[in-house]
Figure 1 (cartoon, helix red, strand yellow):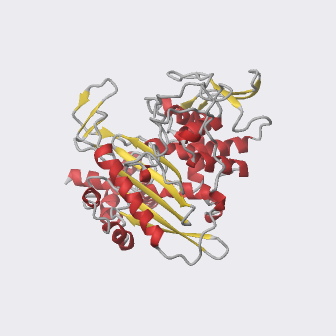
Figure 2 (tube, rainbow, N blue to C red; figure 1 turned 120 degrees about the horizontal axis):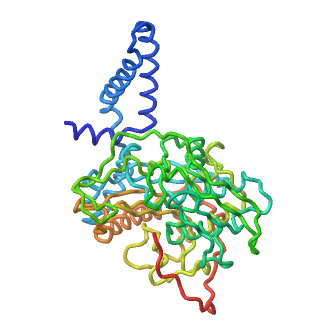
Figure 3 (cartoon, rainbow, N blue to C red; figure 1 turned 30 degrees about the vertical axis):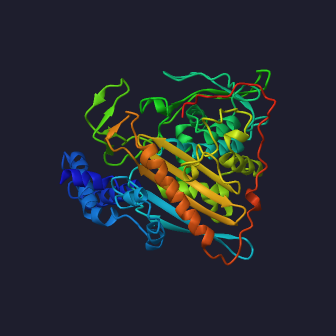
Length: 477
């Protein structure tokens, strides 16, 4: 009974929890404070009653709000793919913690797009670990912050250096992958999108700051987003601190200094989120208990879809949900959301390892090559057995476009941090089948108006065949 309640409470939206809590507190304080005004222990009483009513309200609403959404329209499309592995996962969505959003895009005669989301097993409160997908909003927020700083000489290409301002922080004074051998926001975004580099995420996190990240996303309407962790093994308190950063000229002279920062804001955390049956801790010791994700980064699948849509199609969302980006920022993002490592000179990645479909999960399984007429504007993540892909897919030859967002969990042994996940045997094959199923449907469906996709025709780079520099073979991702 308790375990069932624990699992169900994981699916309740944090914003719902906050709403219920605030409502109960108001009722308690309004109705009972006057009655116990002279009671010496009224504060203890109020605290106890808050907890009691909060638990009661959660249990009352449990059956209503723990329901997941599956649209018959999308189910019908998916059920037509008879691949045995594909059907195995579809028929057991709880085990695989599967959630899918297919976004159908239709254009009017003026090429204005409309978006219709179709869901499979979607539940905004059903936790998945976002892993590297958090790099996408961090890239958008980094560019937005640069634009709002209004500092002469500081932009996404400006060189920067990171000092160590608090315990365990790591300095960064050089970046050998960049053309001028110095770090910059532009280079972090390239590395984050091309191969999902972890340090690039950490540095963008340090630039925007924990407070700036969460306040900005909450102000845009993503109330349940929580990005509180760097990928550095820091404690909760250490993650609140971010480094001093210096923007510099190529000769090393200072343009602007951003001081070290600390986030004093409190966070609302959900009921405990524990996954698996055992895990290895940071000392590589086996702990026979689930891993605790209660304080980990958290975004819903739909928030991710909406965030990507807001950058690819800014006018399709309310102004408050748009990022403050310049036209050059949009072109830059479109380029590196879809460019391949084989087309990139800086960083120069080893294309035998970082092949074209390396971070394009819906086209990854089997051949490493991407279809010539297709480009995917996306961000993926993989960690702890979770696989996630937030994509906008374009086929220029056949005038096809759609968005597809999915997450799943593939860890049959139930042990986390053992590096024995079912990515290759289950995860990648399933996501490939999912992507191809929607792609095939899109190829044959009728459209009232063919889309003009010229906005997304990008002049990509070409690898310099005369460049004799060694390629980058190892990346922390």
